[in-house]
Image (tube, rainbow, N blue to C red):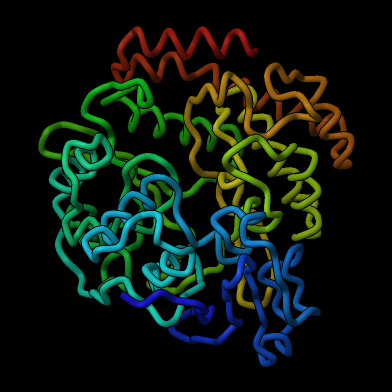
Length: 418
């Protein structure tokens, strides 16, 4: 199997492919060099760490998460996708310790999230669309995640290797009628749209305490966030033949047909670790203004800070803050995602509120708003709207028949925070 020493980074929207630059690794250093033609275009894909005005960059490989500059590291998945990749390389006879960051990018090839592709690709090259049985794929994914099987099928390897996050998930195409499902890692046929499906666990475990209810809980959190005024993607529940309900979220990096949109995260833009607490919402509000120059987008980022605090969504690490860039280079916040009840690491938020991660208060929210030039009336309105939306959750838990032990655990914690 070829060990890649350099890869070309390609920008692809609507099939129009342009070379952005080259990423290379050697002798303990990681290099990135822009193509002259891309520099002439002047489109900033990574304005803070790889500004377009400079041609060549180099970093100590060990200083970078996953050994790559954030522009490329954003393409790599988290625990679940890495597991799928590792199984692929294992079948090729490559030990995990021998897999390089460039091998992983080559595995993704044209299937990375967002608008970036990597050449030459080495993910098997299977672009055929296959019918998907959600229940079957969900069971296989959960068995692989739990260690009860060693190898992923070719279908799961194709649709599960690029999504981020720790939970088992897959890229799925859903028909316009909502009843047919196909593999969604590559281009879809007419009549289908791109979705990300997170598979619900059939049983509770230490790292997935809500078991068969986790899909419904995320659905209700997205609904609550939408009611609170946050921008969220389209979402729905898919019930398989075993009765498990899986949360499906419309992909905002594939908004129309097969058009691709460049996506970045705070991790990729800032080289901020997502493996340990590394950010403050002060920084995110500054990033929102620096990227968009739009106070409306800053206000949206503030509403998310309010929601994550009051809803006890403490899984707010650097990869869970996203941004989208249009073809002209204009940035905006992505819809909010990965919104659900989460206690966070040791009860802390991954992203702090003016330095406070364990017990942030309304005072910290007011301080964030003031620092971002959000007036006090707007600050109070956002807090009140989130509180009002959360007050409807207990009734929703009853409507959806969430077990009392789960509902009480969440409601009690929400009341403590409030």
